[in-house]
Length: 451
Image (cartoon, rainbow, N blue to C red):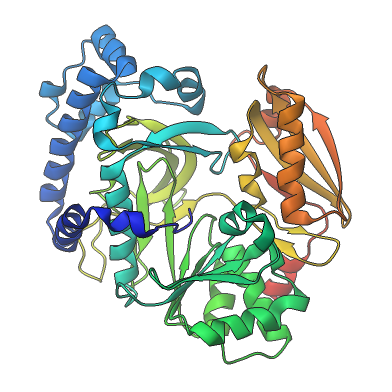
């Protein structure tokens, strides 16, 4: 998830300062106190949903589920999980009737599954998101106003005249956006000059994007680009990637896990502990499988939002997996936020264009396309991509043209593109556990980095 905060995020300074103050304090709270906070927030969000959200009003009446009877987090187990298919089918009745009160704004994302959904976020969840990042980055020494560099593509795609620009700097937020669509061997010195010019202290991006940057810097013997910390997000951070990044940039990687729907947040501290942010949402683990050693188990993430009133997601089935300890433990950092041991999130391949650029963010391609139930991008050769699309009835020739136009913005005119329309069952059957949106049959960069 990109850090895309703009000045409008500061239009609620009192709310931000209040939430920030609470998060500074709550990370040290005893577990019991944190759980009590979650129960109170859960009771509030469920009561709101029962009174203002038609979908939940009907569901709760059918199950005789009463918000006032929620005394523990286990109360949630009485409810079914909320899947992306249910969201797509019930979008209108999942929106709160009083949503305008919370300043809603629409989002569309496919996340790590390739299955686009639309939903609404609001002011309280936006304040939470800002303060969540603020707290996590503070663990690495960040202070509000420090300059940071972020790998991005949205700004450059939205401004056609800037599609091939190297960067965009916002002096108000001290954010330096590097265009991921120009990340290649031939532009690395431009990127290095840009970083030298603005002297950012921190780097935020997908682990794959940061690794390609590190690879090209090392290849060209550019050794003066360093940071105080790196912030990894959006993909599963692999052990070899962490080692490579920390070696090249001479600093620690702080990993994190989350999604735009804002029900679960996990972040790594300075001691290497992966903390569940209990104040952010409620994380449940279902379909548990005990490890052979018996000390950990793996399961699917289910998340419940505690702050998004415009469209609260209760028991949202994320389709990502994590590993957690059987017995709770305390991190050496001293924070009381619960720990997990491993994240099994998205691990996508990169696309290499005919002009040798490295595109690591194509999993977002289907986010804005109407009529796509599930989509995949396969690079079959250096000059050819295959789009595999399971379409719905609302998919039109305009949808197809929109896909091709967006894709051209990423990969340029030199890439041939074929489209193969397949069934939803066909795509899902190939990846029974975790669907892979981007697949490359040509890249050997991982092998290079491992060595």
